[in-house]
Length: 416
Ligand code: ATP
Ligand code: MG
View (tube, rainbow, N blue to C red):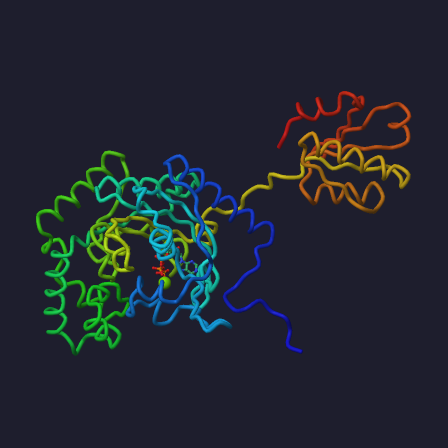
């Protein structure tokens, strides 16, 4: 039988790593709450159509990356590669647009069939937010500020840069697209094959190309800024002003794009130099046409998603918060009493660990291993004279504490 392995691109989250993920999630959830964004969850799978319609036939995700299968009932199902489509579907199928604006936060696993590498998995996790029903540029400012808040609360602001661009409104984008088609059509011979396909389907995406020949052409390509109509230009200025007012630094990257038709105005990305090729940490933008594209009522929207794995790598080790007290019986006759004491301490709200076997020194070792700060020892003398020995595991110092004073004593104990 073949050796049992996790599926390529998937990963077990053992406690140390799981703790980091949880820290990222909880930090983001708290920041979202501070901004009035409530958590919601959509199913991990949807009808394939939900993603086909929103992401479009020409996106990398739909062409190459989706986990799609036919279920036993003959329905085509896809494991969600991202969560905005699911949120938009929920808005439509749940008739939620009666209550706009809506502010949502989400977090959970996503699935993409990609080439696995550091910071790129097939099952990965995202946190994200969506602001629906707000067409004002202050909406863009708010969600970027919330992104900054999360990065700041995680202590990684100095490792990331905010890159920002505008795609303008539909009219501006159409004019720009025409100018790009014009320009790249004049340089077909130097364009990569991929980008030649993009030229037909999705010319803006060429600006995203990593191909060196393409990059040289892109450097001289027309710029969106020169094709913005006055409304779009005003919108962009308002977003920049809003960010300036908040002291949020950004770099205008005129080549930052999102390829699909319903994207407009702000497109942004927090990037880092510290994760090699996987530099995108948090990415988002405005998607005013999305809900309508899916068959719902015209609803402006703006949001972002961030990769939890990448955030967790930048965050580093998160100290253990748990197991502060280990209860240790001295001798097997004391085991039942020690377990009762353990339960008593747990009932009083102390994080408590008890080993199930071993002599005192083995149990002390285990206590150190789980990161306990102190051990409560229970032996014959302790029972006879109704006290406990509390041992500081860092210094080795011991203190006798009468049974009745134990919880009080532990409460005042220098917690770590
Ligand atoms: P990339 O350029 O790295 O492929 P993307 O443009 O596909 O990213 P988005 O679809 O914007 O990414 O998703 C938002 C965030 O989710 C990314 O910035 C990244 O942090 C994370 N992410 C995307 N794909 C993966 C993956 N396969 N593994 C881990 N994290 C991912
Ligand atoms: Mg990708």
